[in-house]
Image (cartoon, rainbow, N blue to C red):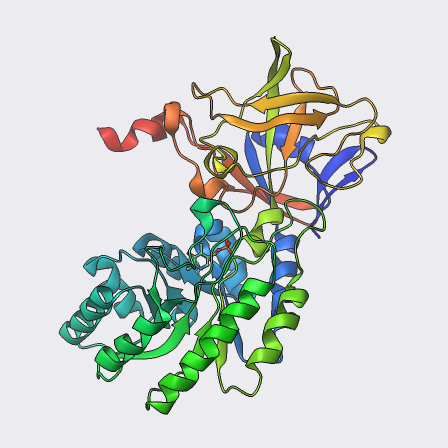
Length: 425
Ligand SMILES: *Cc1c(COP(=O)(O)O)cnc(C)c1O
């Protein structure tokens, strides 16, 4: 479900034609739908309403301050991974009491900033980090709470770069070691270790790993409680499926149907850190066709966006549905799927202008015939799209636009050449 739909063959973001945005703002451009963000948040909230649940939207997925602002207004908490993200969230009016802070390499400066802000939990990934947090909290005269990140060692199927919940990862500690961490550090005045945090990875499409993880974590929580430790919450992390292809991932309600029954009557608060499942299909990247080139047997569609603007296909071999923003009736896509072939489509590679073979958005993809000047929509680009973009090749980072019903506004200006060198003088 999202609010990017074709009307009479023209792509609309809510009630605004994307062509109109391209004409006014230029391309490439990220276009977000506010209604889609809010609907996902609401659906997750509803799905878990039988538990005391805090939803902490994962800022790194799509962190424009204007987006954080309306998410905060809608009652969302935030999952952050750096001091910069803390800064963004506070500036956006996010409540510190709903911020959780993950990451294996927090610096002293970042930890002190988060202690000063009074965030909800530090998500701790190692004994060394916890020791340092305790030291800094004492030094600053602050008290804080922490979650220990545990690897339940469940199979979470995704790209090798995207799994984090196995034993051999740099993230968190395994279940046996968790007992020892609580024994060694559970009883100290500065930092109350009172939450178990799990984050399995990202890009999976199944409910079972979450169910399995909860089933493995609950006995640990029982054991810890029997030793006198207070465990007030379970943080189940993020990684819930996002609609890159129509209808291929479980809904929030389906995840909840697996998870909630296991947690009722456990006297545990639940924290969720959804990123993608909220923002992925709340955004598209709109790009314009520059040239068509025949190379051997292959046809290349060269567009004005590059891997610096959207790196997921190059980095993770990620799939994004791509389709022209204006099509004849017969080419209106019935659904978004990788192997969609309609009568009359051609098989092409969609590539960017950067001097790297990895600079592509799609290979051997069916597409209606396009020509120079046509607009293409790269769908489901809201998550890890703009937030992972860079200035590689001295390319200006693109504009971000937020659509709200009939209105749209530029929420981040396109960078200029002056911006590129501004800090170098
Ligand atoms: C990245 C991340 C998330 C969000 O992952 P999604 O796949 O975008 O839902 C949540 N929690 C932690 C700790 C993360 O690192």
